[in-house]
Image 1 (spheres, rainbow, N blue to C red):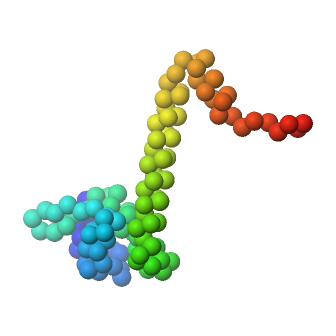
Image 2: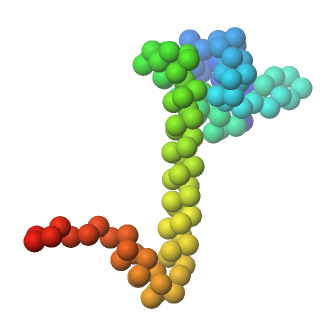
Image 3: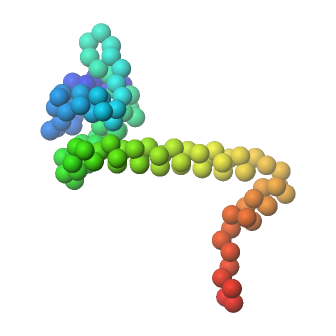
Length: 111
C-alpha cells in the first residue's frame, strides 16, 4: 500500500491534480484513510504504466481510457485462459487428451 503523496513523489512529473483526474476517470482506484488516498500495489503499477504512457510515450489523455480498457480486457482474458488450462489439466486423461488434441494446430494438407 502506498499513500498518494509517496506515489506522486515516485512518479514525477505526476502531480496531485492529474492523479485525481485519473481516479475520477476510473483509470485507477484508491481508498482513503484518515490522512490521504491509499493505493494497492496493483494500482501503483497502473499509475506507473499510465505515467509511462502519458509522459514518456506522450499518449493523449483522451486515449488513456481506451488503452487501459484494452489492457484490462487482456489481463482478464489471460486469467480466464489460465483457469481454463487448470480445468483441462484436472480432467481424466482421456478427456484431457481429447481437449488438447482439438486445440492442436492442424497439419497443412500435403505437408
